[in-house]
Structures are given as C-alpha cells and as structure tokens.
Image (cartoon, rainbow, N blue to C red; front, side, top):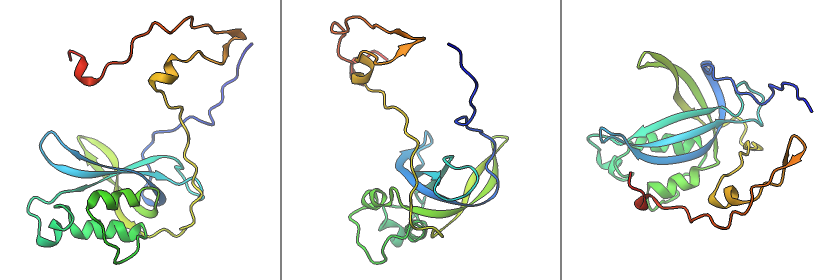
Length: 189
C-alpha cells in the first residue's frame, strides 16, 4: 500500500511579517535566566478563528522584573506595574478586580484573546519576531481550536498499540515486566 505527499499540515518557519495579529494566550510561566534575570514568558498563539496569515504559529513575549522596582512595581512582585496593567487591559480583564498575587492574575489571563503588533529585532545575528504592542482584540468572541498533539505519558507508552503498520498488526509483547519510571532524583545525571 502506497501513500502520497500531503503538505497541508506542514508548518513554515519563515519570519512572521510585521503587522497586527489576533492571538490567544496559551501559557504564562515565570522563569529565571542563567544571568539571574526573572521574567514572565508568554506563549501566544495566532488565532485560527480569525482570517489572518500564520494561523496557529507561536509568538513569545517576556515581561521582565525591574532591577529597581518602584512602589507600584512592588505591588506586582517587582514586575513593571505599567506593563502588567497594559497586558491585563489588552486581555480585557475587568478593571478594579483584586488579585492575591501575579500568579493568580496569570492564571486568569490564560485563554484570553488580544491583538498584538509584531515587529522585528536582530538578536545574535538573526532576525526574530518581537511583540511591540498589545491591545484589546477586535474579535473578542473566540472560537480558536488548539491543534491537539497526542500526549505521551508513561501509561500511553506502555500500552499495546491499537493500530497496524502496513496492514500487519503490531505486537509489543508482554510489557508487564517493565520497571516504573524513575524520578529526576533517582538518576545519576
């Protein structure tokens, strides 16, 4: 049995052109660099429910903690108060709502939509996309559908495959004698 090529699911990794894009906030994670700088890393997905180029492509944006935070910045754990408020406004969070901490705000921001202006910047000799501005979405009703990738866990790896390869059933044999997966503390490296 043969097959034919199908490039409909192949992603291009060309530089996203400058301009405005409707996005959805997929994740926000606080991370610290090797140099000790801490930032909120936003992963944004270009929405597929709005007619625009680069649907489902990812954009990354970081809000950095201030080196010398003002009293207003200290309210948001040392991040720029102005940047946090700009992000919140762009994501259309209600004005005046109280949050226990920045993490609570970030948890609420997940899956909110906004419109970003993408620019270009050179970093280590290569051009890359940067988020220059964040504004409220022109399409607040969101019907974006995330592209699902199968989740691989210890349980799914150990399961007997239900599919066949080239019309022949695949038999993994008896997997009951496999050991449990070790945690990070159990490995020597």
